[in-house]
Length: 265
Image (cartoon, rainbow, N blue to C red; front, side):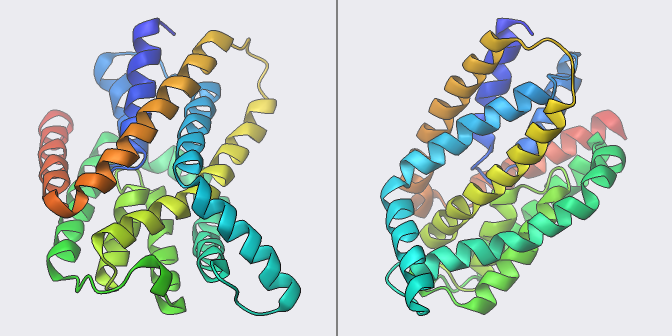
């Protein structure tokens, strides 16, 4: 990989992992549109390590208190402090974990096409707009209930379809369930932690089977660049979300989907 490829792909991963515009779609499309060879499994794992580091560091206080209270809740067999939110994150991750195990090979072989990405980008973009307009936006993530968790968790499983956007579909479901924009985004980001761990772990196991030489410079740069970009993205997204809403991302998705249809259909 050239330095330009490393820089662009790491930047794309960092920017798109937490915005509701689909990181997987962009990582598929950028090499295709630029005529680059596939970046390879090792680099994919590296940039996911970067974005995981960013979200864990940003929510380090919440993650620490959730972890402590979760262990305490197990010992005392009752909900304690932030253990409710911790259990919600764990339970909300189960559907995408099961779907990933069952459908990952099918998705990789049958759905990684520009047309699938185009229609998913448009369709789920419109759904995001509808949720933002119709959602009551009355509750924060600390008042989430188990029905919310079930709906958001099942919605997250749809993110296996390239172009859907994991953050986008979980925010959409959370908004439909009555969470505020901030709560929808924050819960989506917390939910990303075990999801990225699972996805990275799965790819890491597959990586162990490969015998190709490792470009350590590309991996280190990918981790650092994607991590810094993702952290900045989370910070400003949460800071500006209530002011701008979801409409800019919906418009971006419509334009991107239309361009892909014009080019590949």
